[in-house]
Length: 74
Image 1 (cartoon, rainbow, N blue to C red):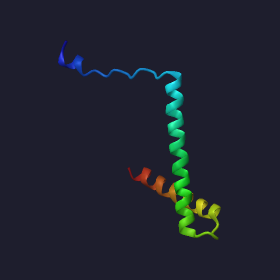
Image 2: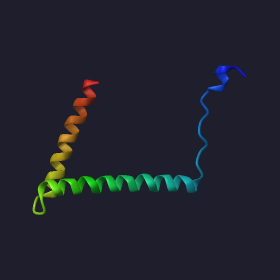
Image 3: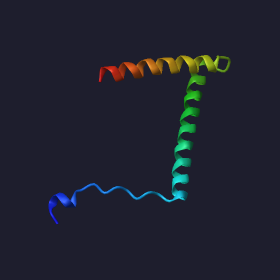
Image 4: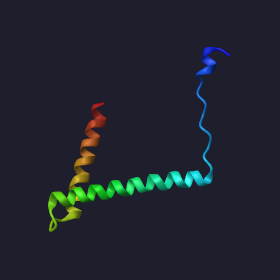
């Protein structure tokens, strides 16, 4: 076996259906927790009487503008 053959890429095996469900559930939980943390941070910033939907909309607009500016710069 040559040195090149030893380092060739070998694709990972396809996970079982049960493992795929577990992986998806873990990813989904992470996304849900991330969103909850974002909303908690916005709520902290605007206070208990602030407009959470407006704060989220403002955050999202700023995020999109910054995201596109960074993409264009690279």
